Length: 182
Image 1 (cartoon, rainbow, N blue to C red):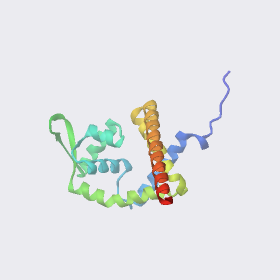
Image 2: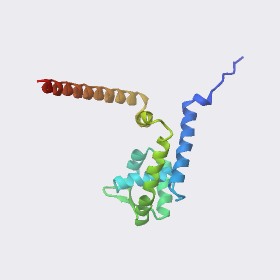
Image 3: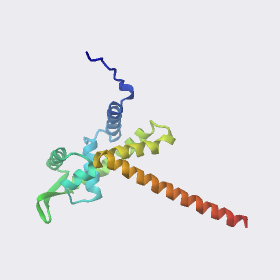
Image 4: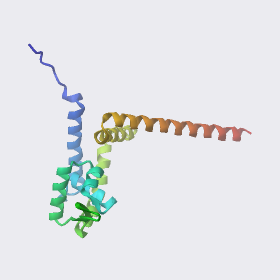
């Protein structure tokens, strides 16, 4: 007979990430002042702003939104007059995505609210924990993109590069101190 195992939601990373996402969505909604836009729609606007003319496949890569969800999202945003889809040059099967004037205006309207939402999210943490929190989220996102093993290897390389940079900076500081003593 199987023994029932307890599961403690209060320490479950999956559950806590879900709760944190709900908190982030609430802060985003509040900070954007009732403008009807979701975080995913904003992510698409940001990616288009960074590089107009991206294909929907490139938008998937830029935003992390899965292909079918992104296609539906872009379709709805185009129907609302926020985005234009055109055949991509050189690939008749791909759609390039661009802003409409209304899409550009919406981005400009919402950007400050999105920044305020991020500040509100980070303000829930002590100042000395914010950078490591953002780094941890970045690692999780990269693991999703690359796969866990490739993300670990990438993080290891980044850590080694940072360590080497710190070592070089310390060596430079020692040289400066020696020159001052002379």
